[in-house]
Image (cartoon, rainbow, N blue to C red; front, side, top):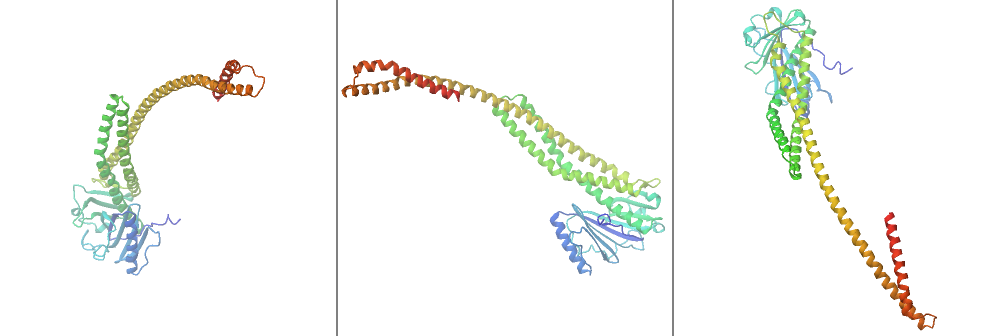
Length: 409
C-alpha cells in the first residue's frame, strides 16, 4: 500500500516554473547524495529522508524541492512561481541549484518547464527552434505542450504547457509525466552508444570466427586442432565478457523505451493541427536506436551460438584424435603384455627345473643322511635318481595350480 502511494502527483497551478535535473549515480554516489540531502534538509529546518527512503519533498524558495533516487540515476525537481513578464523569462532566483548545490554525479537531464494558463501563452513560438518544434494537445485537448528538445543558453531543454481546462492535480500529473518522458528517453538513448561501441568488436569477432572455421577445414594434426580450440575458447570468452557487460544497458534501454511509450499513451498526446507531435518526433531517432540495440544483442547471441557449435565440433575432432591415439597406445600395451606373458611362461618353465633341482638336492642329502644313520635305504644315488621325475611332476603340477588360481581372479 505504501508503494502504491509513494509518488503522489503534486497539484500545480499556473503560472509555474519547474526545474528538473537528473544525474547518473552509482551505489556509492547515491549513498553520499542521500547523506548530503539529509543535511541540506536539516539546514533548512526540515527532516531529511527516512532511512531507506528513495524520495522526499522539501518546501524551498516559495515552492517545493523533490528528491528521488532510482536504480542508476537521481533526480532533483523544483517548482516555483513563474516570471510574470514573459514566457521563459529570467529563472527565479529562489531556486536551489546555485553554488551551494552539490551534484551527485554526471548530469544527464536538465529541463525547464513552464506551466501557463491558456490566455498567458502569447508569442511563445519565438522561444523555440522552428526546425524541431513539436506542438501537441494533451488529455483530449485540455492542455497543449510545445518543445523543440534543444538546450537553451543555460543548457536547459524547454517545455511549455498551456493549460486550458486541467485541474491543479491534473496539471501536476501532466508535468510529472512530461519530465519523465524527457528523463527516460535520454536514458534509453544510452544503449545506442553502447551498441555503437560494440559494433567494431563484434565485427572483429565475426571475421576472426570465419578465419578460424576456415582453418578447421585444412587442419588435421592434433596439435594444430588444440591450438585452434584454444583460440576459439579465448574468442568465446571475450564475446561473453562484452555481452555480459552490455546486458544491463540494453535491458535498461528497452525498459526505459517502454516507459516513454506508456507515458505518451497516458498523456493521450495528439499533434496539434499542422504541427508535429512529440511521439512522432522522438520515434524518428529513438525507435531506430532501440532497433540498433536489439540488432547488436541478436548478433551477440547468434555469434555466441556459432562459436559454441564451432568449439563443440573442434572439441569432438580433438577427442576422436585423442581416442585414436589412446587406442594405438592400448594396442602397444597389449603387445607388451603378451610378450611379458610369454616371457613369464618361459621363466615359469625354467623355474620348475630350478626348483626341482633344489628339491632333488635336498632329497639326496636326506637319503644319504638316512643311510648313514642305519636306516634301510637302498643306494642313495639310485633313490635320488628315481625321485627326480616324481619331484619334477610334482613341482610342475604345483606351479600350474598356482597359475590357474591367479587366472581365476
